[in-house]
Amino acid sequence: MKAVIFDLDGVICFTDKYHYQAWKALADRLGIYFDEQINNRLRGVSRMASLDIILERSEKEYSQEEKDAFAAEKNALYVELLQQMSPADLSDEVKSTLDELRAAGYLLAIGSSSKNTKLILSRLGLGDFFDAISDGTNITHSKPHPEVFLMAADMLHLPPAECLVVEDAKAGIEAASAGGFKSAGIGEASEHPDCTYPIAHFAYLKTILV
Image 1 (tube, rainbow, N blue to C red):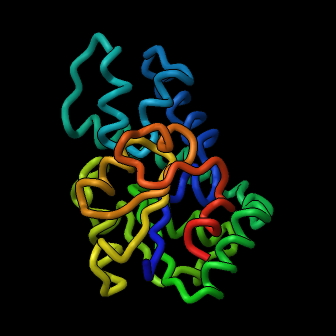
Image 2 (image 1 turned 90 degrees about the horizontal axis):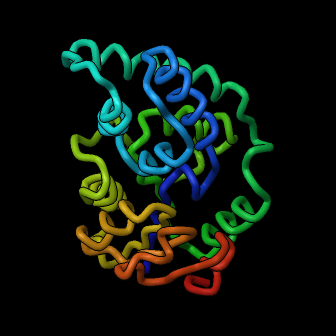
């Protein structure tokens, strides 16, 4: 292995609560039932695909123009909430592990479906830390399609076989497997049969790589 490609939400940091609050505000305005169980289905899924999941419970049919407006409204709420983030939201465990992997000579990249990846990294104090960032602004397919990870590997000038993907969502493990990557899974991702290395904590990456 020469590089590690990390998902962002649920791996490097946790923005689930901000996503939930923003989607909940939109769903409430539209009169659509939405709870944390439905929110769990949105993990690792693109913004528009997430909106489609929420609209499954709507009695109305919406045009693409209306859907685009809903997605923009949710994102504006989410970005506003992200302003609450700071370097304090980056755990010591994650930062120290990243530093040790860097010291060991690994290239480090982000592979996230989020279009707000660079903003989040900036808020965390990691704006210039990673060697490559592949995110929702440069892909056309969300996970479980492997595009976001393949793009990251290409940016690093490495084949998938030399990159380890770190994920917390099952869709991310499926994406890694489809792209020819080995994977380390945290949380529910560790239960996926295609997960190469199930790990309980982020720091356990050191037992695999260092």
